[in-house]
Amino acid sequence: MRCLSNIGWLLLLCMGLGWAQTLDNAAEKGRLIALENSWNQAQVHRDTKALSELVADTFIYTDWDGTLMNKATFIMDAKNPSVETTLVANNDVVVYFYPGVAIVAGAYHTKGTSKGKPFDHYGRFTDTWIRSQDTWKCVASHTNLVKK
Image (tube, rainbow, N blue to C red; front, side, top):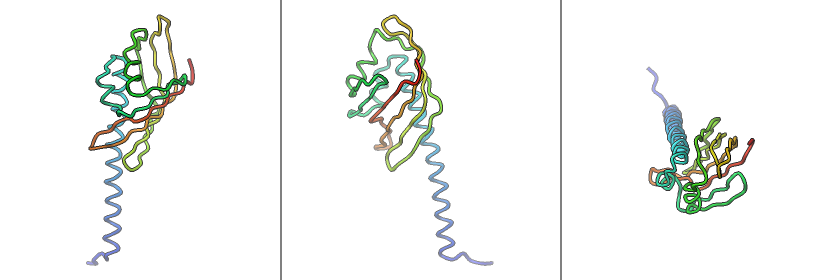
């Protein structure tokens, strides 16, 4: 029987680590998509506590109309009684990983009423998530409207 050389073992180790990294990324991708879906449900249910836990204290949000918000104004906006959101759904979601950072981008559909008038928006979003102490926090979000 032939023994593997040191280079052979090193190649096997690297291949195994690459496979393990792929599995880790798949799990983290699932976790981030679940967090995005939790965000959607928190908006529908006006769950500002859940929203507050998802976003970092330094969170910055650029809305589809150009409005810029920090965490405090974003949370206050979620409580706005003149807006009733009945649907927020994402599709075509992609996740890109960098050391300690993930970018989540996709399409969204949101429906409801604002000041008594119905809205039905389709758009795109890009969210930047930072991993700290085994927890993901969104630090920046940007949306743009594709169709009203």
